[in-house]
Image 1 (cartoon, rainbow, N blue to C red):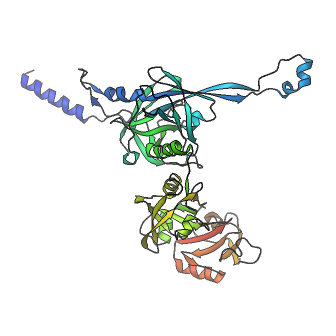
Image 2: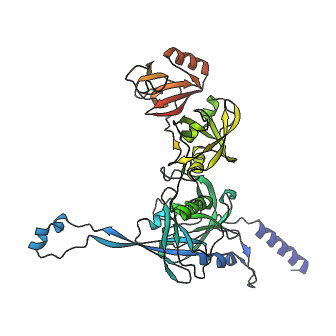
Image 3: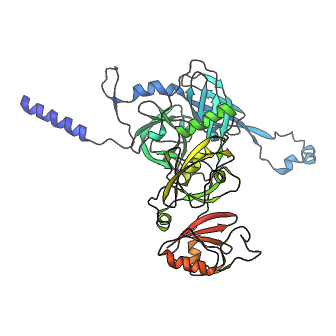
Amino acid sequence: MTRANSSILKAIIIVVALAMPWRADAVAPLAGEGDGRGIPTVAPLLEKVTPAVVNISVVSERPMESNPLYQDPFFRRFFDLPELPRSRPQMSAGSGVIVDAAKGYVLTNHHVVDKGDQIVVTLKDRRRFDAELVGSDAETDIALLKIEPEALTDVPLGDSDRLKVGDFVVAVGNPFGLGQTVTSGIVSALGRGGLNVEGYEDFIQTDAPINPGNSGGALLTLDGRLVGINTAIIAPAGGNVGIGFAVPVNMARAVMEQLIEYGEVRRGRLGVMIQDLTPDLAEALRLPRTAGAVIASVEEDTPAERAGLRPGDIVVAVNGRAVENSADLRNTVGLTRAGSEVELTLLRDGREVSVTARLGPGDRVSAAPSGRIGRALAGAEFEELKPGMNGYGVVDGVAVSQVAPGSPAARVGLRPGDVIMAVNREPVKSVEDLSRAIDKAGPVIALNLYRNGAELFVVVR
């Protein structure tokens, strides 16, 4: 082979190597920094951040399970049995991340330290510290611990709002009690929910392997910043299948700040019932967009009522940040301190308006129940509201007296006792009003219902 041919072959090899795709479960390589090896690696990054990822051991007391006869004094005396302990210690383990070395603050999951009587934090260099529980929040599954700030290393907090699907990430934790372990992958999805309907969810989904014991560990970007607290996995076979979830660091930061100040999370309350703005509902209401949260009802004497919010308003932004669905609004309000003012951007009667509300103390924005959408109201019987009926004296509308099982009305989600208050925002007070409004509405109909003290929208095609 001539020297010229050899040069051409080398050039081809380099081009082919550069064209090869990276594996989905591997992070983008970084050149070795001064180690003389010159190979792709993330080792320099890990040398800086792994000392801040800790193991957390929790000891808790659990009631002893025993035969009821052993609790009978006569039985124990007759057989000369010793007194049995009523509880026994139980140990569990997880992970955590030092986020403030000067003050000794460690972020982890609520479920890692829940009901723990003794919490011990072990560093990578094997130093052990008894930890104080500063506070814990089950709704977001975030807890904050404090240890002695003795020559600690922390991880700088990133901005989880800037993450994009496809960004490379590294997960560090203590899976299966093996000791500190590093895995890599990408951000698979953002804004995941539905894992815990009672909590506040906006999970980062990643294919970086996360296993039991990783809970509370760090999800890091390749610039060494913390963007998530690893918290859950989907594991139908009992092991990792490439679907893991992390609490975004911006959510964890908001919780941490309140835990430091109050020892608990004091959530703001708006006082509305909400549901997603679906494409069907947007079409029925002739809206120019399909993103937002629909206000189904407004509670009396609440911040929402005082701010002038109305049923049918569409919340599209809070403090300038876009609201994509009801979960977005619920998370934003629920993680804002009570007493704070928020600016809500609304779509009302086709116009964009802004209102300011001062959040009161409370739990959360409530999600309105939803029904299966059908194509017509066949199978339902209607009548004017009468004394003794659900909603009489509370709202104006038309009562649903009967719904045939399996009928189109039943498939829509109508129930006996529902009150139809409006059709495509047009109020109805009689069966004749209802019939006229439906005839006028066209193929897509938005029904505003009153059910069990709450209001909701149902779309009919």
